[in-house]
Length: 162
Image (cartoon, rainbow, N blue to C red; front, top):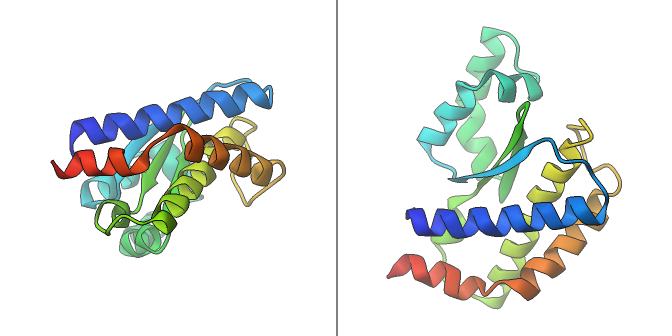
C-alpha cells in the first residue's frame, strides 16, 4: 500500500472519529491509527504489543501461540478490526478492499466497514472492549452517512492504481 493511500485512509478515519466523539460528547484519550491492510508485518506488530494482547485477553504464552496461529484467518475473515491499546486504537482493514473491482456495492461496504470500526474506536474511550454496546449502532450509521457523503472512494482507490 502506498503512503499516500494510507494517509488518505488515516485522514478519513481520524476525521470521522473526531466528528463522532464531538457529536456524542465523548472525551477522547485514545488516538485512532490506521495501521493499513492486514499483512504478516501487522500480525507481528499485534503479537508484539502487550497492550493489544491484554485488551484481547491474551495473557499466557499458550494463548499467544493460539492467537498467532489463528490471527491471519481471524482478520481475513472480517472486513476490518479495531484493536484498543492504552492510548490508541489500531484500525486494520481486509486487503480485499484494494484487490477487487470497484462497484457501488463495494463503496457501501467500505464505508460501512470503516464506520463500524471507527464506532468501536469511539466506544473504546469508555473502556468498553466487547460487543456492540449502545450507541455503537447509532455511531456506525452516523459515520456511514458521513463517509458516503464526504469521500469519493472510487477516486481514493483508483489513486492507488496509478
